[in-house]
Length: 385
Ligand SMILES: C[S@@+](CC[C@H](N)C(=O)[O-])C[C@H]1O[C@@H](n2cnc3c(N)ncnc32)[C@H](O)[C@@H]1O
Image (cartoon, rainbow, N blue to C red):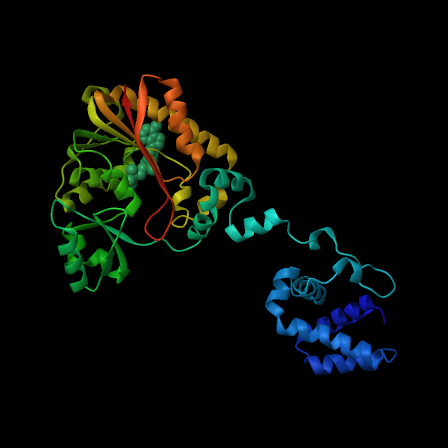
């Protein structure tokens, strides 16, 4: 038998085993039906079958299936064998590989390993450079649960002790002084006294760091407040007076309850009243974005985002920044933030803003990669020259 014919025989035997027939019986049955095969042929065929059985998961993965043919292709791939020489369709050899059976390209292997859609990989590489693998893998893990200590009511040390007494273990988080990462007891948080009495709020550490980077200010507007996570952090941190706005006010419906729990006063402003209330010392624009820095929390976003939607988002981001200009005091600070790790939503937006408005310049600017401590984020502080 040719080497290819031996592979064909192994495929046939593996197929007969798919109904649960033990290997020895399958080999014997094949031998009885193919008496022309010599002892060397039988030994080689047996080796193929047992090689597959020893590494079945690898073979199925590399061969793309559980059929005898897929398993043999997979094991030959694992062994770096000459697959095209063995599966050449000559004589009794198996037919050559189909298009679908061709190995994944290096780029496709990368996309599988990183669990990212093909189209976004160039943007990930350009935005993250040598950190792309670490971030892509971090986006596949569960997100940490992080608390923000309400400095208006307690200290991180006191909060950690109180939480531990309620069965919630935490560790300090290097991204923000206010951040405690929960290491055990996360299910107890929402019913704990610490939470119900407003000592702690749930908030990602990078979000906290974005707010902590804002210098102490008087009147602050959270222009894209959403659920108000950053409004609450502003009120407990750099702001002396906090106002919240969202183009969709329903998103802020829980904010009064959350603010009451925190003991904070946050005024909501409707879009039509913004100009009357301006100027603000700080206008925070936590803009709608791809959410790519937090895809481990909402993993669907990774698969539903399209290049067209991403382009639309960048236009919304530009228009939000432009709309914030007249709301920002002459010597005030316009703070841009996204939970995206893509340069097109971050540095590129800041550069485009500076081109449209040469009388402004950027000061503090920071990127946060998605990691064990926090979500991917970006922030930049803009001021008039
Ligand atoms: C990233 S979310 C804000 C998250 C929030 N800051 C937090 O920390 O929980 C972006 C918000 O921007 C709002 N938004 C979208 N377009 C807007 C616009 N043109 N003006 C103001 N808010 C807008 C959305 O309704 C959404 O709630």
